[in-house]
Amino acid sequence: MLDRQDLTTIQSKTPSTESLTFSQIVGNNFKDFKKQMMQRSPKSGAYLAHQIMIDASKLYHIVEVEKKGTTEKRKCYAPCYSLKQLQKALLREIETKTQPHQAAHGFRKGRSNATAAHVVASEMKTTKYTVINQDLQKAFPTMKSRQIRKILRALKFNTWQVHIAAKICSYRGELATGSPTSPMLLNLELYRLDEKLSAVAKKHGGTFVRYADDLTLSINTHKQKVINKIKAEMRKTIIKAGFIAHPQKRKVTRIGKDSDKAETVGISLTKNCTRPPQRQRRVLFHLAKAFNIATTSADEMLSSKVRNAAIEAEKDDPLKWKGLGFFAYFHCVKNAQQYLLLTGQL
Image (cartoon, rainbow, N blue to C red; front, side, top):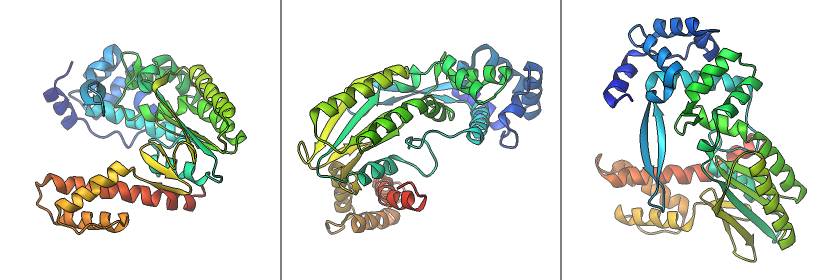
């Protein structure tokens, strides 16, 4: 496996691939591919072309990230610069050919967890409203090379291009968590799941949204019989799609009965209203106190004050970046609804 120094060397000597499409770079055979790579990087191009054919996993750097609230660690596979540029070229070409389902809000321009939450909140038209949350277990590693190949063949890439694309998008036969192409490929693989669950939600006067591996289906009823039927339908659809429903990340909230609000994709939901959860608002108040700002109950005013105080803070003060980060997140949640209205999605 390449070490950090090798990756840095390749990064500094490999030019951008933005001017060419993936199909143009890869060509129709290995000779074309190697020639293109050598033109772009005379010293490392031949090595990269051969390494992609032999074992592209050696062009990744493994990064371990701690999972929130657990002792487990999530492995992310960061591609070297030249491989990443090739993946980005593939992503740009895929985006010109197709787009994920409308219910998908993760990893898409102009969309976020905030837009997903606003779509759910906008459908809360009765006092009897139920929100069902379900996560997929290990969504990225569950997707295999054969599924990547199937998607690319459907997008009319030729056999050689599909072969190379499957190699650069996977890490030892599984969809690489950390590759620029992985979110788009996951969204496309889950297209039929999104379509099916959107139809189920619409049938019961609700809506369905998905943010990466986080599924949220909402309906305008509290009837347990209907809720159980939909939960079973969700599990059946997830299994049919080739994924696993996470047994510990499943939640049903009947608003007005179990609770006055629900939480989805990290945002609290009430009728026609979304806001960051109470614990995150408490952090903002804590930051206000740290910056010697008078306490106020107005989230917008408080976040603006925190932002201004953070800008004036010392450069190496860690509170500076935390304050700016929380302000940016509040700003995202606040403006998501306006974006959806302007683009006709609400």
